Image (cartoon, rainbow, N blue to C red):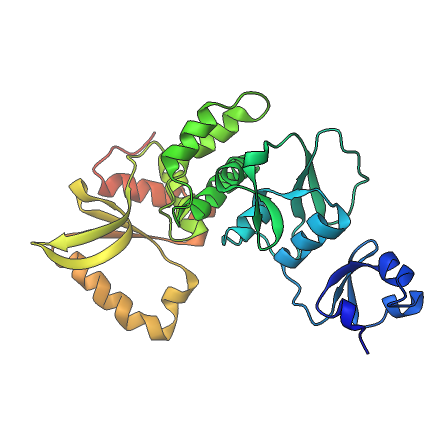
Length: 290
């Protein structure tokens, strides 16, 4: 039987033993889940990244502030799962031993950049976005930023203005990632597709474009180059499933009937993009690269 004081709680095992709630043997029973050294949770609690973040900032490292992907989750953008390390920030002079499953950044955080989310100290949205822009590789940073910017809790121009004021290590990547992120992608793969198109030196397509014909709505597409009447669509695995085939064909017909060309892109194209880029160049009326 679980002691009432520990039901649904995260706690230090040594503290629970000292308080007489558990014996040393009981700490290791199936009623509790070990999260970190000497940190346990009631096994009735769902193991989530948010739970791990609470355990780190409130129990394992009191005074730590959730940052990066961990803070993003507290703002409603899930970029990390329970298998990913908790990202947190501690004061610059803080010396803590490395802990498996925890990624620690040591730096000073202004008090006005720290807020409480779900009872957990976390960086505010703008600081969180700037931290996401430091993710490596750089394309992963843009992917994370696109997802974080999508709900509008931070606007792209606010992020870029803040990035422009940064100095020191990593500031160039932060500014570059902030310049590329727009928060319009419907999925991480759409962000990677947009970056691929830009990197190939092609004109920047318009994301989430609504195609109309004589004022009549036809479709909303991933990307479009309206002047050339070219649509670029990322084709996820679900598009090939039987329940989607009919709707996809009707949608395609609506676009092609008035003269739009649809270029489909798959995950394989992102890994080996030469053929896709060549076709897109051709459809846009651009010379193929030598």
